[in-house]
Length: 481
Image 1 (tube, rainbow, N blue to C red):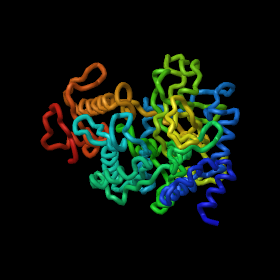
Image 2: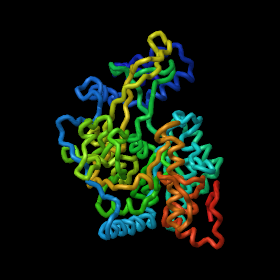
Image 3: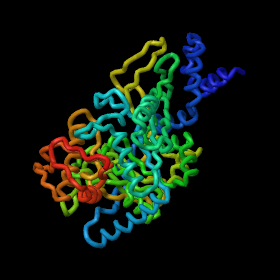
Image 4: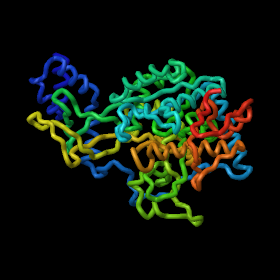
């Protein structure tokens, strides 16, 4: 039998023959394109997801919180007092040992475009620093270079792109000479895709020769790591720890020895950073114990009374906000990303969306209401599979100011302001006079490259080592020494 006939028959047997309903109108190249897409789809998985998330009782795929016991998650709080400082110092030493041994790789989820920011290109190419406008990718690259200089060991960097931005991302790195990194240090691979289906579970077409596909969520990064060969390549290099972060947060500490150290000291397979959530309406998930199991409850799934509940100290009871910074054991990634058993893989969640698709006549329909279901996985669901999962607090002002929206909160404007506040804290800690307003924002734009300093401590050290410190003035940039 012709291989094309085989795949068409498989779709017909699965009740998905509509995917090929325009087959007779396609030329050879179009047929090959459609067949190539079809081969990437696990029909059994699509059928199972329709049963469980669309036809089943738990149709939204979200965390059920009605009858379950929900308690705040325990976490390691930022240090205050000698005992805690000793704990953090011990963790730092243990983390530095792992970095020095070459056990740690950085992993960035970077499949998004800058569309919401009004930017034409990969989000990682978006200019984000307050004076020079360095792109996000350059900020991370310089932080990794600073780590390499400090510990004398290069840190491998794996980047998950998407079909939308892979070629543009590869080109960007090549044009900028990998932002000073050894090209062999940087590896890229594409995110997985899932077909969109209607509410009857039928796979939709975006064109006569194209299935309506969408990214499988940041949780899909785990199986993409396995399927791309990244996990195998890491093992060959002696890497067994993955420092995970998303591309939109320029304040992230790409490789944090204290965080890694706590992960190792507690024997955790997955650890997560959290910031103090102060507003019940803030759109971040919270870490919680649900029937005794640590997990992230999305802000939309947490009951209003729980979201607003406060402790005796006046702070939110559910205060540990998820900021998508994790450390994962490579064995956990391999286990969840490579298992054939659905019970041993991250669960899919359902998202009802408006998806342009072809009708039976071949006309493209632009829906004005959600007409389709997309399936996506969340990386934080791995916490429920991990042994000894751990949450560690980090100060928001030190490590979380994402660029998500064109204006308003989490925008380029707010992120640049937060970067300036961080630089101002560093200057003032080093004894320099820098006027700031009541929010800590300085009255002049300045910028500190991670190649000069990537923390308050390193800034103080490097500033005091300068033979002729520059005069503090608007637009000043401290860069590579």
